[in-house]
Image 1 (cartoon, helix red, strand yellow):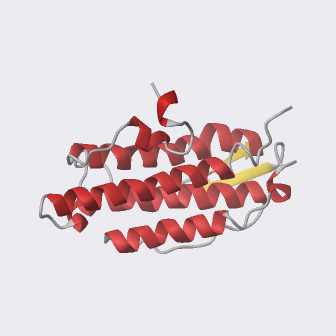
Image 2 (cartoon, helix red, strand yellow):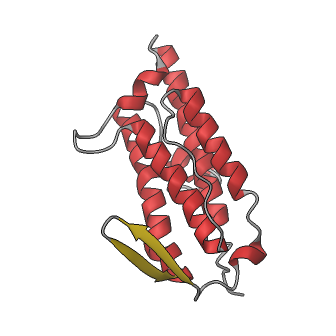
Amino acid sequence: MSLSLYEASIPVYLQMLRNLQAFLDKAEAHAKGQEKDPDGYSGVRLIDDMHPLNRQIHLASDAAKGGAARLAGIAPPSFPDVEETFPELRERIAKTIAFLETIKPEQVNGREEATIELPVPGRTLTFTGRDFLLKFSLPNFLFHVTTTYALLRKEGVPLGKLDFLAGAVAPAEAA
């Protein structure tokens, strides 16, 4: 049995967006335990020339909804990048999840060889559906989820590998 384009995309985006929500839950609990405002995490950066946490979440959302839409051959919804507070960031993630849940397997499967064009500043990147997912969309999406995880870890939020992998393995299976 082969793995479908849908199976390799939409469930992965959904799992990791739900994990991203859980990261924010843990960050909020940690901040409250420290008598700090959790929204203070929104502007943290790993280094000055990297985007802050709130922008990492915007970009993860954009990568998931844009990736899913392009794989399905539809226009991605446009969300303005204005969220800064934890409630706003949670709502952004929830809207992204709600959109992804509208994508059906029949919209994605069979588009492995479809041409996907992605305009970027100064040029247009062209991929097959398969290459778009595996070589661009998923790596880009996971980069922003991982960076969010790292930013929160840097701030002392007690996240671990199982938080990142939640939904993929049972706790006894993780290394």
